[in-house]
Length: 298
Image (cartoon, rainbow, N blue to C red; front, side):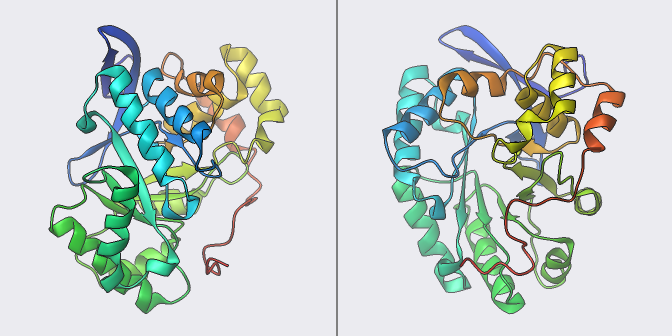
């Protein structure tokens, strides 16, 4: 435990201690790092590979991608080179990918999963997510049963969802045997999802944020920058720490080495209750992504 009461794992690379990595624990007993690197809108090229590799060398242990990002091959190469550079093993990493609409349906899930791990060059995923709920409840539930099949067959360590509202969960949980361990959603200081966070807490389902910087739009916010000055950190680091202190897993995206390193340097400070409240007060219920209630992938 650290001074904040968090469970921590000391990460060492070539015998050199580089960071502390806090983890959360799912209801099934498995753990996941609180901070990872996202790869949304990162093209399937050398820049992607190098970003993932640099993240691993810098201390990241969680990598997030998805079929629809179209970059699983280069993410996989970055993982391979990152492991080689650090001497770490596959089991030291936590890799996530996601199932998209064209692979919905129980009979399609296993093939989609195999395609993703083959592109990544891996034998398994630590977490596989249904990327969106869609608008057809029956198909959504049938698809989740395919996810359950993967989990029961020990092909994937954990299964979860992305962009689900409480209403989607109510429909899902009424008809399935295994509940998701996580819900990855849009979450940032301008869109704090208070109702959904409380619902997930009651359900013992963890929340993970995508686009925590609101596609960098929020990093110019005066309040965030003022708090950054108070704690001698950047606005981005303040947002990441705010996520963590709300119990939300966070996967900031960057391909810039300096920013990749900065985004993980968030374990040596804590925001005060007053600072957390100031950030919470920025909420505008403002989305930058689609509304999950109506989005069908078009």
